[in-house]
Length: 326
Image (cartoon, rainbow, N blue to C red; front, top):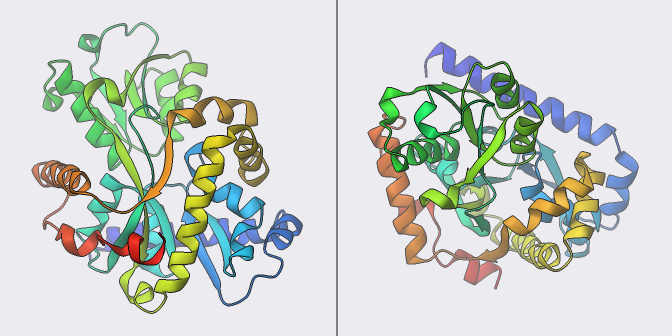
């Protein structure tokens, strides 16, 4: 591994550890109440901070994991690659990641495994364009996060007859994008909430959703194979709780929004509006999932973002959900 990559990975792990330490000290009374009666070693789940993780926030807030007999703590990270990187580093046992992001990491981390799907959407990620940019043809520079963001950005440009190679793409993290847009450093970006709404606050405007140009995503729960091979029943209990929380979020988005606000301080009134944009449902893998994942790998290889193609039948555990969760 190159020195720069070692430093980058160390920074991710160190940052994740700091977030975890902060989450364990602030709000510890609520966390303790939620985990009352939980037994066994702590299982840490690395998640980002946005409404799409509402089922996990809700499950912790209501003590659902503890009731299922598992001692779960959420580890808040920046999201995206940082979540799965925490699993690779061993600071978390499970992470929640979008399929494209997970696949890019699986190409370099042979032990990462996806257990199944807990949500999907073709509406949650939105196109935000800068004030004065009223047509995609006016775009000269786009901001993008890794993984799903870059995949969607290329699809959006191609859909509008624009060669992605003719556009400058500035890569960064979700919190970077609204500020870059407001300063005029980029003409647009494609992101989830709250970063889409924050871009509008910076003077931008919504110009569509990823489903408008044929893109969707599924969110997976990931684990390291070495840990998963000895903790299948435990992982199954955790995933079953997430699937149950999925159903609650769908039926009562207001309660889910309130739980999200308590867990990560996101405004409940904003969250409750965007939750219906996501299909919250736990399930195992289908033929369609493998087909979609194959297309995403083609993109990653074409962009030289990965050097090797992971075997989808190995990293996407077909039948695992049905065995341990259903």
